[in-house]
Image (cartoon, rainbow, N blue to C red; front, side):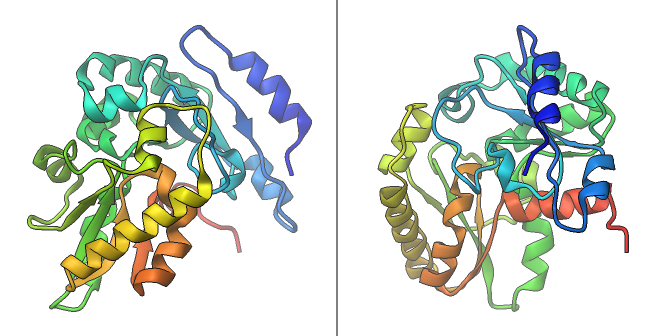
Length: 262
């Protein structure tokens, strides 16, 4: 549940030409006081119009803690994933500074490809920054059996360069499975107003099965794309592997920023 005060008044207060912000305060049973006193996690949003279904990083109901969104105008999925991110770096920094000024004690993003600029964001914003689910790789890899490795499911293997992987600390030689030819990728990268959720689920499961079939040593999967999170349970059931995502990452990230009171 949300408080209408926070949902509408704060959203209206923070609307600017370059940013649309919505603060979300969840009232969980037995935790309402804590939820209302926690600093929000700031989330830098791409400029999108596709549906943000439950589980998506851009759906406030996904999170069990307060979040504050800031939209970077013009930074569409196509521009960030397939084109050149550099023209938008200062815009990401500017929106991030607004979020920090509004009380956010940490910053996250809605695109795994933004790992490429995480160091610059952290340097400019002065608070911890979790830019990409891929940044979990260095934590997950050592937990696997010695004969196992990570696997990555991404919206575009063609666009996910060694520079992106290196910036996120992904071990060299990590298998990558792309979804460039899927209807899901077309909807997200094309910033379409509709999304066939069931077809996306089937495509996601198929791609994950291909990943482990071609790389049997894969013991865990990281979902690069934040829009893949709703399908993580389906992927886990179909592959028998653990599935990590921006959801698992930001739950951990927020737990460090705002430790649980016992």
